[in-house]
Every structure is written in structure tokens, then in C-alpha cells.
Length: 368
Image (tube, rainbow, N blue to C red; front, top):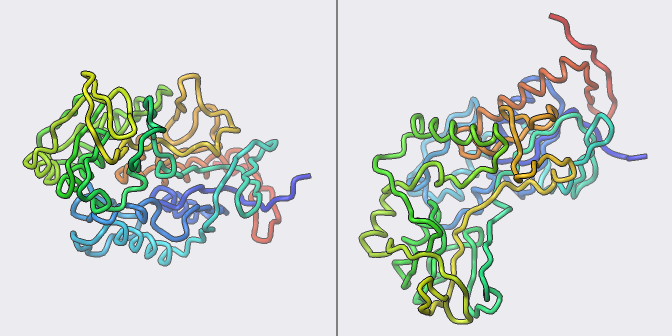
């Protein structure tokens, strides 16, 4: 017999989408438990590199019912955003268990068994909001294990000073790659490598217009069950101040990907050799969903088909901070949508609602 705590629903992840979902579950009176692997509020923002300032990020959308206070554009995002999230948690009284890591979610009859670093829970619905930060993409190239220099990922990046005076290969064609390339090129000799020719688009990022276009494209992919691409694959690159600064400094001279890695450098596509002391893998992240693997949600293409936020064929599981809601633009909307869908499901099925103390009461389907 499985001994476990009980809740009606769980939210896995305490970033923006997870907080939004918890807020809307709370408003609907649905008993739930929130698990967050971080030690404090802020999600992945508390791990951003030191020089990433609020003026540089594309924008943080307000959490529900809690407008952002005035924020200094020069303040590091790694402190400004967590402080804002912490204020939201205090104002709403959300109860978040942290640091608690969810290791697996399994079916247990008509319920789910949620295995965590702090015990097991049974729930009737799952809202997953684990984001991507804990699942960095690290490509492999021949000879990589022989390299004698540094090989950090964006996940590990602290500041350009760790590369001062070096020869650095920066790999990646996304927003973070351009930001870090620009910074490092101030203190080091850089070489920029991408798999494809980068595409820069003219004009500023307009969240209400550009954001809607991107969401529509990503939504089309997840509704077809296709694995989603990187953010830049949908948006293109913008001529931001840091991109223009990198171009002026000559750092945006893109090279095709190298073919192999040697102990003291890389083998170029044309067969020549370039010596480097470090390789920065600014190669992005993928959704951190391994704890859901026991549920068998992926199709043969490796994608997960969604209908809104709901996993197709499994109305009790919702993915937010995933696909079209991966950016802050869609995070709040996704949290509200997932909570609303779960409320309707519980109403229609006459589900069992967990009560404080671990007791349960059956509620018949509501009429009307």
C-alpha cells in the first residue's frame, strides 16, 4: 500500500507560469501543493549572469493582480525579478514547498503518484511549470573530451571576466549567445560559430504584435505534436544595442560550425585550425520534463501534442511555461487557462477533493 500525502492538484515549478497557476487554483478554491526545486523565489531568473540588466531583457509581464513596482533599468535581473516574485508570494499568501525536487510522476489508478525529494503525494491533476533552465543543450563534437581549456554553458556563465585575455569560441545563434559574445569580446579575442546563418530582423521587439505572431507559430507546432524550436527560430535576431555594439567591434563575423575539437583549439570547416582557450556553449535549453517520462506523453517525433495547455489524450496533465507559454508573454495566460481547465474537469467528473489533514470528500458533479 502506498503511503502518501494528498492534494487535489499539484503545480511543479515556482517560476512565473507556476505562480500564475497557483494563484488561479487558489482563487477557485482548489486544494493544491506547489513544489519548487529552487531555494527561494525567482525561478531561473536568480541564476542569470551578473551583467544581465533589466534594460537588456525583452520585458517581464506583470503577475496576475500584482503590477510591477518601478524597476531601475540598471538593476541586475537576477535580483530585480526574484524580489518581484517574492513580493507576489507574500501578497497572495501562496504556500510553496521548496527546495523540493520532483523526481517522477506516475499513474496510480485514477490518480497520480508524485515522487519528490520530500516524500510522495497523490493528486488528481498535474500542472507542470518546470521551464528549461535545468536542461541545457550541450552538443557533442569529435574530440570534445580532449579539450584542455574551459567549456562552460550559458547555464554556467557568470561574467566576461572569467575569459579575460583568452581566445574564446562562442557557439550559438540565440539572444543569449549575442549578449555573451558582445560582453566577452570586450576582454578577449572571440570567434563566433553557428550551425546556420543568423537572420537579423529590422525594427524593435513589440510584445503585443511580435509576441502574438510567435505564439501563433509555436502553438501550431505543439498542436501538431511537433518538437518546438528555439525562441530565435521563431523570432529572428533583433538589432539590439548589444548586437550593434558587437557588430561595431567586429565580433559578429560568423563562422560555420567547426568539425572537431582538439586539445588546444578547433578544426574549422575548411580544414584549418584555430587555437582557443575556451569554448562557450551558448546553445540553449530544452524543456525539463524527464520527471514526466513515466507517463509516456511523448510521440514518436519526441514532441508532446497539446490542446491549449492540456496534453492531448490526458486532460489531467497540463504543460505551462512550455511551447507557446515559454516566454513571459504567455505565462500568465497559460496559468489561468490550466487552472480553469482543471476546475471544469473536477466539476464534470465529481472528483474527490482533498481537505486539510489528508481527509477526502466526494463532491458530486455540479448541475447547470
